[in-house]
Image 1: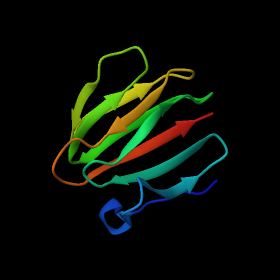
Image 2 (image 1 turned 180 degrees about the vertical axis):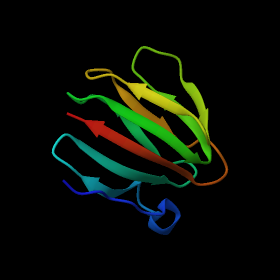
Image 3 (image 1 turned 90 degrees about the vertical axis):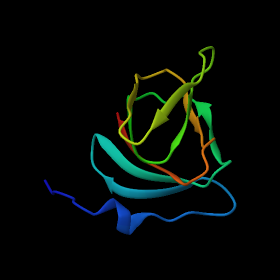
Image 4 (image 1 turned 120 degrees about the vertical axis):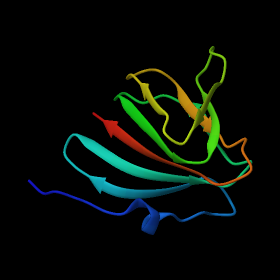
Length: 105
C-alpha cells in the first residue's frame, strides 16, 4: 500500500482546446484527478458505475446533472454523485475552475 501526496497548485495545467484532466493517483479502488477548466469550458454530463466526489478548489461554475437544475458551485463546494447519477460541469465564471475528482469503483 502506498500513500500519494502533492500540492495541487503545482499540478494545475490548462488546455486551450478543452477541459484538462491531470491524474494525481490511481489506486485499486479509486482514482484521483485534478480538473482544470478555463472560462467557457465544460464537461458534458455523463454517467459512471462508481461514486464520484468533486471538491471545488478554485473558481466557480455550474454543476450539471440530467433532469436537474444546474447547481452553482464555487471554491469550497463539495458535490457527491452516486453511481449511475449523471454529472458534469460548466465553467461559467471569469477565472479558471479547478477541482479534484475522486472516482470510486
